[in-house]
Amino acid sequence: MPELPEVEALAAILAERAAGREIARVLPVAVSVLKTYDPPLSALEGRTVTAAARHGKFLDLATDGPHLVVHLAKAGWLRWRDGLPEAPPRPGKGPLALRLLLAGPERSGFDLTEAGTRKGLAVYVVRDPQEVPGIARLGPDPLDDSFTLETFAGLLRGVRHRIKGVLRDQSVIAGIGNAYSDEILHAARMSPYRLASDLTEEEIAGVYEAMGTTLRSAVERSRGLAATDLKGEKRDGMRVHGRAGQPCPVCGDTVREVSFRDSALQYCPTCQTGGKPLADRRLSRLLK
Image (cartoon, rainbow, N blue to C red; front, side, top):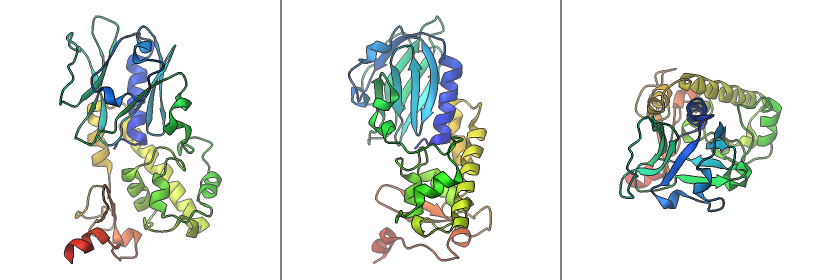
């Protein structure tokens, strides 16, 4: 799933390539991705792109009229293209969900695509991004200057949930998902199963520092990359996430995994759990 650093990079690409240009056509291919109907999708046509921004994991293309807001979900992606075909795309079984064409003879613009059968890509046309329910309930952005250690500590106070889940909760902190929460906790040398309310001041400070360092480093690595290269950069930059069975780059221990119904977390026992493997109930049931 694209998370804060990747969406930040996509917003930068759109700001560089689309700002100041007029939208010629917006062509829906998978109508199911469109979650709003007023204003209509056609209200974007003829409008000038004024900016591109990120709200958590949401991508916001602003115009001198409505905003086009996109949530890429688990398997969605934005592909910038020069020389888009003149023939309109046909609905079908392919990954293409929506095409936006900018005015001009070069026929540049972008496609929104989504792989797989579990569809979650969402597109909104709104007058204000706060009209999108997912944006309206977002917690603070961890890269905002106002997100201080005191702010973070206040969010954890009295929260009796595992720190892994707290970091992923978009209503608590915006933009962090499964991958970067694994990376943050590895950098902080903390078990993903620790209760947020049990953390000491020193441990809270450690997670806060790891969060800022991990996210800013990922944003910096993604800066200037083409959209086609962002997924590979994310994958290559991971130390534990997606690397179960491989050696930890810090201590050399084997990275372990805990599987859930629709996701999995990865961690290093030596760095994070005192050398003890975490219980994996799903695996235990399979071995019975």
